Length: 223
Length: 223
Image 1 (cartoon, chains in turn yellow, orange):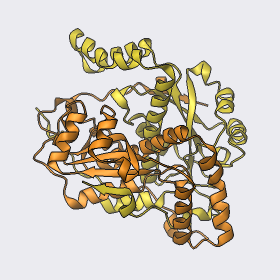
Image 2 (cartoon, one colour; image 1 turned 180 degrees about the horizontal axis):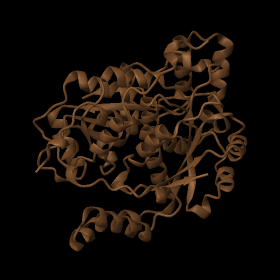
Image 3 (cartoon, chains in turn green, yellow; image 1 turned 90 degrees about the vertical axis):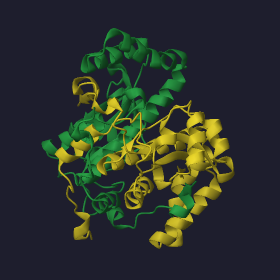
Image 4 (cartoon, one colour; image 1 turned 60 degrees about the vertical axis):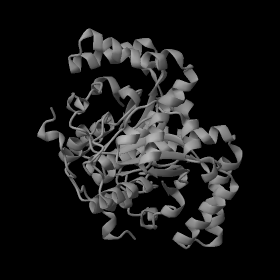
């Protein structure tokens, strides 16, 4: 039976939600002096961890860089764009390097513990995913895992906007250099996409420009 | 100069945000009798359109299916999973079929109009993206566009959770069948991922299970 708690309602008005999504923009220049406080950052990290993923497999790791020297080095490896250096927290969203049966077993075992699954249900749960994990070429699983990382990016950007934190999704960086600087292969992952978090500089005029979205007549098809 | 409006603050508490992200789950069974009202759906569609994308290129289209017969046909093409048929609004997130210089020109022209860009800035804006659009093999651009679609999925799932609407991200469907049933090639797009939206059935016990996320010690690396 469903509990009353499962019937949730909107926790903020649609107007406030859209106001914040309109407020956000890809921040070009962060205020290097302004840091995200620990409580606010903890909320963003929780939102990131709560992201949806296919099968719930969470084929990701999140590398959070606050060390100034490392951020500076990563900024250079992002074709000298300033955001990785100037932001408060640089989140490097990474995909798991290996998605094999051992990874699946770990996930199934952890899920079984969290949900007190009996052995037969545990086997069925594994069986549902085993074909995909064992039957998909590694290169295709890499692309699949990267796509899941982009869901996480969407969750993080939304959460940041709602908490009044600025962000800048970035694909323009040298992945091999990031992997090397952060020793990611040793940590079992590879960089996919960046999300510097912090607060916009008063000098960043991009935040004042009208947001450009194609009209609904071009992007929405109703059937 | 920045206006006061650009200094936004959190519009809801971190506690409420995380409560809703914990409330959401991949809904296995929707209540087929319960429809999303127009005002709420309009908010979700706006959130979807406000999703971030690389360069702001919005390489997507969103096909929203409410026609019962079409939803039923799509349910069969989703390996007979019930969500496409039973949900209120089925959002088929699609990638643009062709990302060529004409698409780029259209985007640049539209942006120039929205932002009153002078000709020299318009040329520079185009130049920033032309190398990518003209120099990337079509298959790689398809993957890139699909990844952007997953950001949009993240925005939509977050927005739905905040508005108390249930959702179920779905990769398990016959893409060729969806494209055929919805005549997507004629509409210049291809299906990438599904997001049925609606309200959970009281019979769906999955919503009562503890959410399974690996502990932060496994997924977060701090540097």
